[in-house]
Length: 140
Image (cartoon, rainbow, N blue to C red; front, top):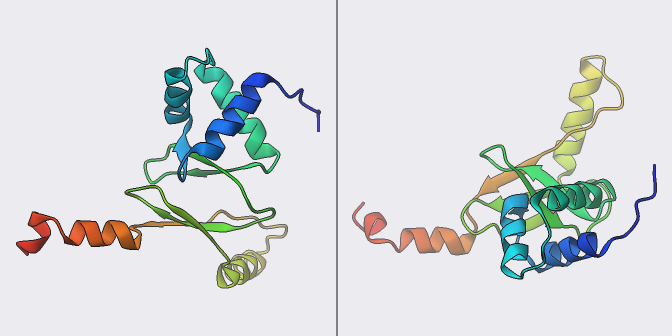
């Protein structure tokens, strides 16, 4: 792996990602940096996020809409997330049953060195409570 030079732009993207609540898209992160008049372009944000994800410093996953979203990673190694579709809150979870299923399914089909990505999207408790308190929900 080629060692990348640490630039002030990458450091600023790293800081903005750490400041973000939950997962964020490159476009949203770029908008926050633009509000701070950093002069960092969208292409630079994408490159920095890709570098951070490759180094294990950021989690990258696909939103339900298919957009790549990122979060500063506090865990090392393989892990999974529960992610709120409304507020973006993310919880890192262990999923031993998923790990066993992935390996046994791969083996049953003659595959080795299997890898997988599993993230669960839903509504967190706070967003569920807020949704239940809306006038439309009370009319049900």
